[in-house]
Image 1: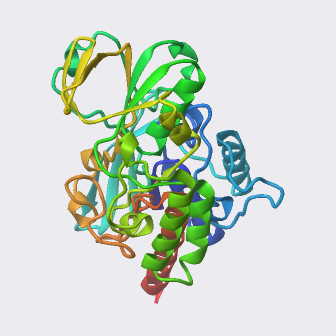
Image 2: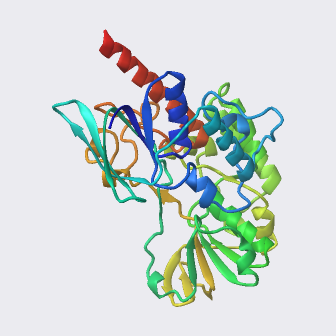
Image 3: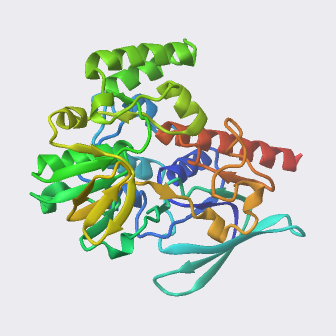
Length: 381
């Protein structure tokens, strides 16, 4: 099957690309390995999840959120928005398609993609002028290798399997990972009567969502270091000195770190107050695991009933993209820096790998589509 554009992935990135291509009347097909679009949001997120950024930074191209929707949307509200988005642009992914490989034909100057229909077992072959990697940052759960983890006698889950703390009442639960998911899961566990501890290995910024919202609105008008100074000052007023609780602030500001590394500040949902009251404990890095006993770097040890790994995801595009070096590095991330990270060689693109959340997804989709359109026009001349 020959298409102008093949898009791999029907998460928000793939949907945004499809909508933009549709607006410009560019024929395309989306290949999605799951049985639905936005499968991460629909199947592998915890119940209490809300968007961490204000809605003005989370909409996809060509469709804003309703004016009467809240500033910070719940998971349910965002999924409803995606449902409406798919309907509005008549997006119809090919589901149950696992891409086995994609390679560039130097003779024909086209991409050749092989996908397996996991329902029928039939192999399908696609030929495209343009290939878009839209499988996103959250392709595969990342669980770090820890000494003795295989010996752990309790439950081990990744955050993509965690739904709520309802099953963990009165249990000792260790949350590994102190990003936004880890901190919110620890909070959720505590609300259900569990006794959570969260591993904090390195300095982190903790802000309120309102402080981040203010910072993002100021960034177009003020230098990053000024915005960082303002939000850090506000955070000090709200949270005080958290170092005595095991949380240390980085030397660089939160928006500077986000720009350089892609790592977001922690948006507090109530976790800090529970840390202060010792309902949630902060522990250092893990040294060793021996059955249910976990030894930490400070020499302390404790028994746990369960471990929740909120340690993020990894890109797996390199597994099927044979000439990944045209676009990605060995770890599956863009080899080019922002703002040209989305563009590779040989009409190869990536969307949603800028570590800038839904705002980055939208920007990538618009830039990629504009580039494809320019290329098509130039080829016709």
